Amino acid sequence: SKKDDGNHVTVYDAELDAEYTFRRKIEEALRLAIRSPDEFYMLYQPIVNARTMELHSVEALARWNCASLGPIAPDVFISVAEKSGLIVQLGSLLLKKIFCDMQCRPDLRFNINISPLQLLSSGFIPTLTRLLGEHSISPSRIEIELTEGVLVSNCDTVQAQLKQLRQMGITTALDDFGTGFSSIGYLQKMPLDTLKIDRSFVSGLGDDKVLANVLHSIVSLGRTLGKSITAEGVETLYEAEILADVGCHYLQGYLFSRPQPLDQILKAAG
Ligand code: C2E
Ligand code: CA
Ligand code: CA
Ligand code: CA
Image (cartoon, rainbow, N blue to C red):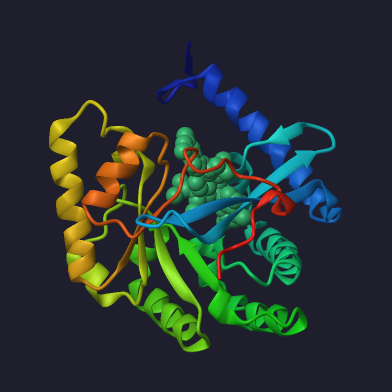
C-alpha cells in the first residue's frame, strides 16, 4: 500500500514492518539474555584433513535458546547484536564459554567466529589476552574466523589487529570467501592464514561443470598466496572428492558431522 504524507509518496511494506518489529523484540530479549548467559551455548563442528579425513579442528557455533522467544538462529541474533551495539558484550560472553570448553578438551584446536565490529572495537585484544590468561589457553590452539564486511573499508586498522593476533600466535581465517569484494591485492596485504571457501561454491558442484574449474582457480590462487584452504558446507562424497582434487587442505560439512555438543566430538588423533 502507499502512504501520501503530502510531500512525497512512500511505499509502506507490511513485511518490512513485521521484520522490524521482530528484530526489535529480539533486541530487547538479547539485552536481558546477556545478563543471564545460560540461554547461550556452543555447538562444535569438525573440520577434517582433506587427504586423511582426520580431525583437524572444530568450529564453535553459537546457539541461543531464548526464554521468551524460543530458539533464534545465529545469523539472526548475531546481526541484531551487531546493529544494536550488543555484539561486543555478547562476543565476550561467547568467548568465555568457548574458553571453558577449550579447557575441557586440550586435545582440540578451535575455530572461533568473531564479528568484524568486535575485532575493530578497541577493547578486543586486551579482553582476549585477559581471557586467555584466566583460562590458561595457548593462543596457538585458536583460529579466528572473520567475514569481510566492514573489514575491507577499514583496511589499515584491520591489518594492524591481524598483525597483533599473529604476534600472539593466533591464526586467522577469511570466512565465506568468494562472496565478498576482497581483491587479490587485499588478500596479499592482509596477514590471513586461511581462506574458507563459501558453501555456495561447494553446493553448486553437482550440476555445474564450469564451477569445478572456477574452484580450481580460486584454490590455486589461494595456495599461491600461501594460504591454507578450507571448504565449508561439504555434504556429499562427490563434493569432497572434487574439493580434495582441486587442492583444498581441509573440509567441513554435514558429510562429516553436523555441529554437535562438545562431549560428542571424538578424540583428535595424535
Ligand atoms: P558460518 O561461520 O559461515 O558458519 C557455517 C554455517 O554453516 C553454520 O550455520 C553451520 O551450521 C552451517 N553448516 C555447516 N556445514 C553445513 C553443510 O554441510 N550444509 C549446510 N547447509 N550448512 C552447513 P549456523 O550454525 O546456523 O551459523 C550461521 C552463522 O552465524 C555463521 O556462519 C556465523 O556467521 C554466525 N555465527 C555462529 N556462531 C557465531 C559466534 O559465536 N560468533 C559470531 N560472531 N558469529 C557466529
Ligand atoms: Ca565461520
Ligand atoms: Ca562460513
Ligand atoms: Ca556464513
